[in-house]
Amino acid sequence: MARKSKYLENNTASGSATFSAGLYIRLSREDGDRAESESVASQRALLERFVAEHPSIQIYDRYIDDGWSGTDFDRPSFSRMLDDIRAKKVNCVIVKDLSRFGRNYVEAGKYLEIVFPLFKIRFIAVNDGIDSIENPASMNTVMVPFKNIMNDEYCRDISMKVRSSLDIRRKNGMFIGSFAAYGYQKDPDDHHKLVIDEEAAETVRFIYEKFLAGYSILGISRLLNEKGVPNPSEYKRQRGFAYRHSQAARGALWVDSTVRRILTNELYIGNLVQKRNEVVSYKVHTAKAVERSGWIVAEGAHEAIISKEDFGRVQELLRRDTRTSPRESRLSVFAGFLRCADCGRAMQRRRVVQPYKTYEYYACSTYRKAHAGCTKHMIRADALEKAVLVFLNKYIALAVDFDRLMKAIDERKGEERQSERLAANISAQRRAAEEGERMLLELYPDYKNGLLSRGQYLALKEKYENQIERANRAAQELETERERLSKQDGANGFIAAFKRNQGFETLTREILTELVEEIEICEGGAIEIKMKCRDEFLLAMEYLKQHEDALRDVLEKDKTTSETA
Image 1 (cartoon, helix red, strand yellow):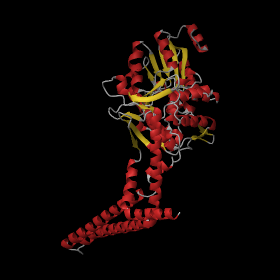
Image 2 (tube, one colour; image 1 turned 180 degrees about the horizontal axis):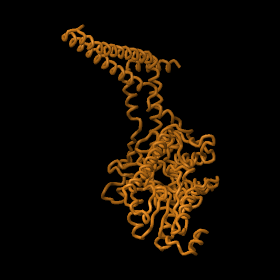
Image 3 (cartoon, rainbow, N blue to C red; image 1 turned 45 degrees about the vertical axis):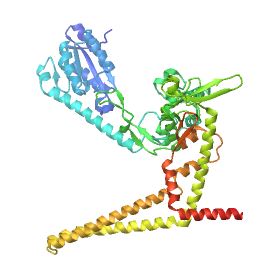
Image 4 (cartoon, rainbow, N blue to C red; image 1 turned 120 degrees about the vertical axis):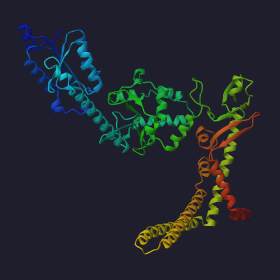
């Protein structure tokens, strides 16, 4: 039923009103409007006062979009007004000014120049002096599109400034968002900083621990659901947050995509990753995914829940082919590590159940799908595990020996003193280069002032340029030598990685992830293990080879000590 003001009822009774007006009011603090001068109440008072001064206009209804941007014409009250226009209930639209109508130049022009004339709508913008009936020229002047362009430009400028300001904050490690990610909460004293939410953080640690222990993502989801742990959206709801997410429709259950998202989020190692999504433009408010190169990452922005080492191992495991039966919660120790030595395809695990024992073995996936493509390359799982365990323990023993020998050689050779000598020589060469550059700069003014002849100038110029080149080259060679020396000390990556795992008796996925790149299964049961830290291993070997004399002395001393004992 039409809503009529007291004025409208009186005016209708007199029969003098000829235009049924919709008063359109819009307010949005987000696009830069000043709340004091553009408030809903002030706009309504202005428009009602205008109607009171024009007896030919009656108010049909007031259409108020409070908190809606002018760049988007898909607003609830605006749409309702359009419905009333189509139903011929409204034939006059009155706004405070063109900016209240909208700030999208293209859309505003469409309604003012096409839609409203088509429906014979009288349009009035009070403060802009526009009235399509009383003053048709006001609509046809170039000022209307010009003002719409300026309103559009104003919104674009505001949008750019807001985006730039938000990006600066993100780069400075400030959290920009309504809700903190699962495992964190906003600092009560600074909502742009994240602090650990210990209750949720325990679940995050549980997820990483189980994945590294060999559980599948689906298996972890099952464990969490069995333990009755609410998923992130349900957890936020229980904490009283008005949080909405697509997973909320599934209740409080965990799903594999949620677990995977937690396992791949750098947030848990202290890095604040923002701007993964952004709206298309200030006119199109649909969010789109941003390419990884466009993400803003602030490292060390908050306290980490997961160590960088564990996060790195998890990412490597996720990159491997670890498909397993949906019925199984745990992955095999070798999932994602085994390849056929001939065709390069992954090996598939199979199980044979006998009355007295269950056997597990691996076979080439190519052979299982098409026997002509490859051969079985079959190997029993227990035999493979035993062989890899023995092999890795031998490498660990070798790493421990390397470490002892290299440290003994370092003590005999005085590597630290050698490094100090190299540093002193590098500094001397840098000073020689700087001195040559200073002299070179002083030559030209002396030449221009007549203190040097052209021949003298050119000869000295060549001399100092050669001095600079020699000094820089010598410094670079010394830097290379110092770098080589530093790589050959006890901090060798091969030694460090293997020493960390000494003493293990059971093979786990964590150990394989750190030490093994890939395992190839040959026909007949032979295996070839491709180790990580291969370059560091070769560097250690080269170091021992370069110090054969010192190594011989160390080994001779070891032999003597052993015989004495």
